[in-house]
Length: 173
Image (cartoon, rainbow, N blue to C red; front, top):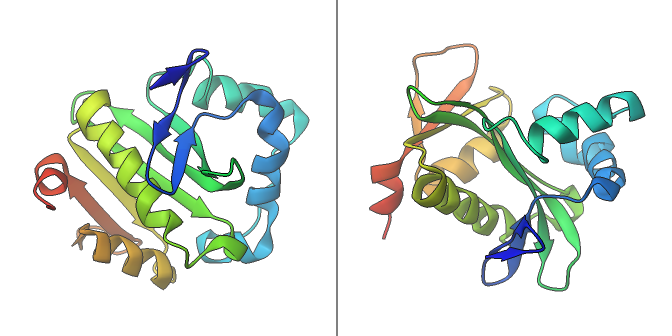
């Protein structure tokens, strides 16, 4: 569904959509929260100088290889982000990113947002494979993606590489 040239992907309990530029403050809040980012390498702050180039690459107009959304409850409260990056047109592969604020974890937001982004990626964008190279220490992320149906690919011992194919996603039932 599109509203005012913005893609909105609606689920049962939440929706995802690309952010407006003025929502950079929320993105910084999410990225700089120590509890939220502990399992993925720690906090990061998007400076003013880097914000606009990042926004143009990831959101508007995008470089065609990245798709970034915020996760909102149906009450329009942001609770995290979900995206894919570095889409390779030859292999039709991209890297997954999903992050829910630590205070909002355990409410099913990750799995629903994950379903929405994968459904968009495989059925509208045209992707065939989604991977997520998680830190070896990120057990929460590993367990969530494995329980969703991702498969562990042991080909890279530096990370815990997880993979979902379009066929596997569509056959999840």
